[in-house]
Length: 528
Image 1 (spheres, rainbow, N blue to C red):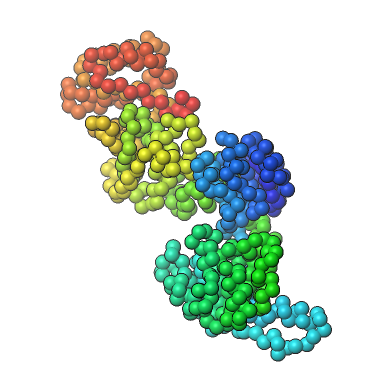
Image 2: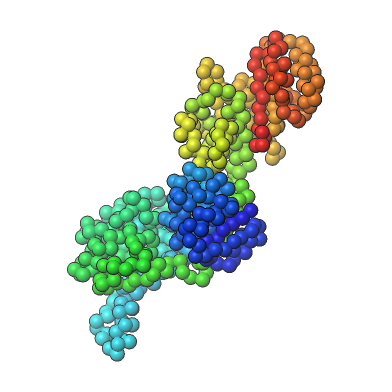
């Protein structure tokens, strides 16, 4: 496969990619040139400057599978357009954790001890020690907005510095915060109680201007604010006004609404320490970020789930290991169900039983939807866009979990009503192989095949032989067979695994048999 690296990343990441695929490095590529050559690539790797907007994604065509963002944020990637196109977007959220945490403290110490101003003063030949009296951080309260990986790293260091640490994060429990030595509080309480406030949240509609005039007015007199996250989270004009008024004691800012921050009011505000987006700029972080994004690009190209896919289900390593064997099964069941139900089913019930019930089922649901939808569309369907495509088609999935999987370690069951008929398909993984365990009311144990002929017929002597004879005369070989029935001489379900496809005239000949009630030809192979 071909990978386009459109911005400089560490050589270690490039070499990992190059060991598996062809890599072209094109730093400084223009938007027009990117659009013109991108259709020839399976993966695109960028940092923060190249804008992967809707126009770029549309120009990429159907070949592009993954966009790798070598960094934490994905502000420069249109996630909605990527998701609709079935393109996985991955980032590298852990590679620069320590670098960002350490830079946060570099700014904090620099502001608290007025290091930059003192350095400039002494270079001017001055010796004004009293003018640069600073603050000790021990015993003060640090408020962390966003207790993710970087927030946790900062908390650990602040606790070691004997600071009291508060955090505000709607996605963290009080127990999780306490594990890091942090008291979880509401955002308003954090604003009012903290001596130092450091933000570590992405830039979204809800976080833009998160700290503005109202929040600054409610802070302790002389408080310090820090931003090593995203420009726009702080209202720069409001922060500058609070600094000029003396209400705010200082600000350490690494990111800006516009970069470079030409014309920013912070440039002329007192008691500031400003750096040019250096949070991830350590030699170690650059290597880790490049390796992290490279590994995930390789995972996606190999058909595996990426650890930090931004627009796909995020799995813990434990969950990924547990459900990995069942993802192909779920997709197969979805493909089987779509053909076995014949008519469109608007509501599908997905039952996850046994050991799988203990894990996040989102990827299994996405795999089922992928199998169902790809039989009726020419669009690329994958775990990224399956849910949105299903929603657009009016398909709803109801998820149920139960610890009881009968005699199996785990089982996945799909059921839904179409017309007056209820369709049920179930399967499991045994010995590393997929098995069909139920079709409607019939229990069975069948290994799925690329082509399967299924008949619902009246249980009469000679029926199996006649169907076999029709297939044999058409040179269609049977590789496996299973027959189940509700009662002697009642209705039977026969499942035949075939080596060849069934020509329409052969299916019609079988269907014309008096005892045959219904016939299905199920094609599970992707190339069929």
